[in-house]
Image (cartoon, rainbow, N blue to C red):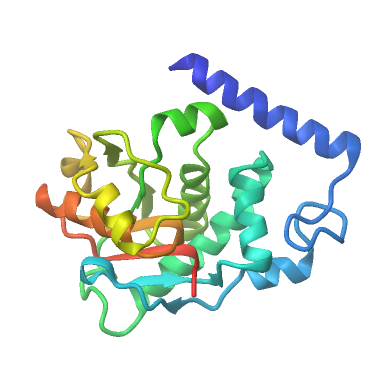
Length: 236
């Protein structure tokens, strides 16, 4: 456990050192200097809207279309080791979370209960290979932003994979649903930790809604009703 943590911190330090030593270009447009230019930050800042995907009847908010700048920033953080992007991505996720719990027709108790952000689970092998969990990092940043805004909020990594699943890339909607069916479970103490909270599922991208739908099913099987879901970006 400590070994994995050490590798993640080492890679984070290495990435930061490389940016300082070599300089960096904007992860969104690839033209301006720095981590993320002002124009690309604005692109990721919302406003949020409800996506067409409503897996398991779950309302889902996003702040960006998963193309162009948003896709480049998400992949820069997830696949290219630019760990500092957890900051702006978490800030974008916070916009989605705040919007989905405040939109008319949402959970009537969201304003009276503290929020619990529950990230979609990542495969252990993927986290190990990357040396970090990108979504968990972004979710923690989002929770910090929401707390600063006056909302009680914490991150509860309540979900895990109970079996191996295939890479979702390239799979259609039906294949994604079949791939994930029954694959997600709730960690043993999580149901207790989530009691009395407004539970919001979070992910970086929603494509078909299969992951969020399976996550919602797993929570409901343990008596936890998710209020909504929030993502950074959504496909068309």
